[in-house]
Image (cartoon, rainbow, N blue to C red; front, side):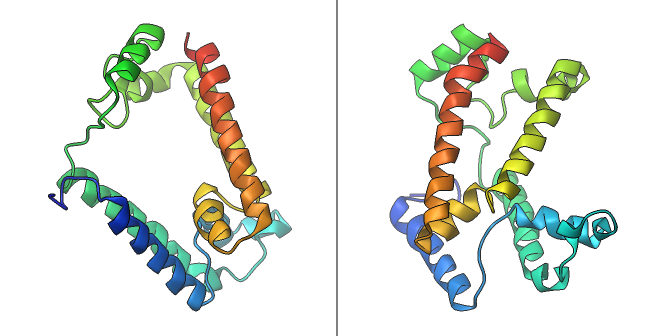
Amino acid sequence: MNLLYDPWPWYIAGPLIALTMFILLYVGKQFGMSSNLRTMCSIGGAAKYSDFFRFDWRAQRWNLVVVLGAIIGGFIASNFMSDNTVNINPEVAQQLATDYGINSAGEAYLPPELFASENLTDPSVLAVLILGGFMVGFGARYAGGCTSGHAISGLSNLQLPSLIAVVGFFIGGLVMIHLLFPLIFS
């Protein structure tokens, strides 16, 4: 196994995630990404416009380092530790090509048929991106956290609201991929 280019097996990655969670719990912190948007907005002065942003953002500085680490780690992983392809089941790749015109499945992380910069000039694509971004952002804050926060941190703390949120995330994903995605891209 080449640890630089092959996906790490569950028996390595799982204990590393568990160790990270244990350390965060031990020092009284919780892992999550969506709360950082609130912190960045608060730093930018959003508290002038909404009480939601009035809090001691300095206490959340450590979490901004997590975001910076995720950005740097993602850059290193995608540029130096990966060939930027995804192994996709050939039947799924065929279905994507036949049903949605996505012929680049398995060639890149983000198929250019959906994510190329030329697509941003299409008003309907921009509308979907903006509406989707707003819904994800609002939903994450309304649920009290994002998928990573609830699924990793909340479930490891045995929090019932996190279990409900994760079930909701999965239901939303299934509705999107089986009902909405075919309507949008057919």
